[in-house]
Amino acid sequence: MDRRQYRRAGRTALAVGVMLGLGAAATGCTGDRAAAEGAHGAGGDPVAVLRRAADTLRDTGSSKATTSMEMATGGTRVTIRGRGGYDFRRRLGELTVVLPEDPAGTSEHRPITELLAPGALFMKNRGAGVPADKWVRVETAGLSDGNLVTGGATDPYAAAEVLRGTRTATYEGKTELDGTPVRHYRGTADLSRASANASADNRASLAAAAKGFATAEVPFDVYLDDQGRIRKLRQRFSFVNGLEKTPVAVASTTLLFGFGTPVDVRLPSPADIYAGRIAESGAGGSAGAGGEIQSGH
Image (cartoon, rainbow, N blue to C red; front, side):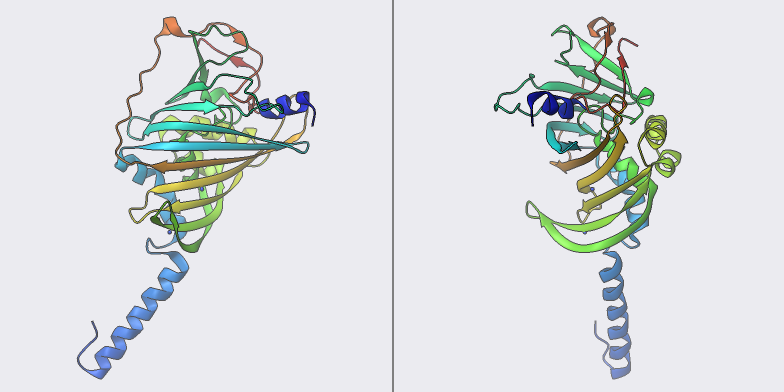
């Protein structure tokens, strides 16, 4: 691929009875439980389990997180990676997002610092003419992808709230992630349903995504630990690039670990926010879905 295609693509979810009769009854119950767990996992019906996964994270408090976002368009594939922490009770997070290297193996941009807040995304080292000491502020409800893609990393709590829209899900069995036993589920969520059941902070953003993506259906794979906490969530989104009218497939993966780790997020003051206009949106430009960003609001 040529360098211009690469840059454009880069921009652009786990007593036996004493008597024989009692023993037989106990065996039957055990068999029923085993059969149920084989179909649903220890947590019960997969759809119900996944719809309450966001609440489980909120009750947990906070965690460390890593993210990756893979975008494919026109035969070109790039990956944007992030690392940081998230406070699920306050709906605040901080990620350091690293854009992919160019074909020569060098980075075209310094890592971007992103602050995730209710209804807003703040980015520093955004580039595109933004002073190095200034933040760009984006209203997530105003983005046609609801910031599930724009920042180059999906807000971990928003990703979990997408699961509130789970329509179908199957339990795929037990496995391990970094030595932690987890239950694997696979299914499809509907963004419109997710929006209707989401917290007030994410309702408008998910509603925007339901309208802005090529489809409101979001296929996913998710891995829950024994406490019902999301350990890994992979979601697949699809939108049409507003500039080039080409389909873009996006796979967003969120890994959560280090639960209970304190996360201290301090939002920038109004004086530190850039008041200009930016033509290219998104950390990796992935918001070909998001269009032009107006900052400073």
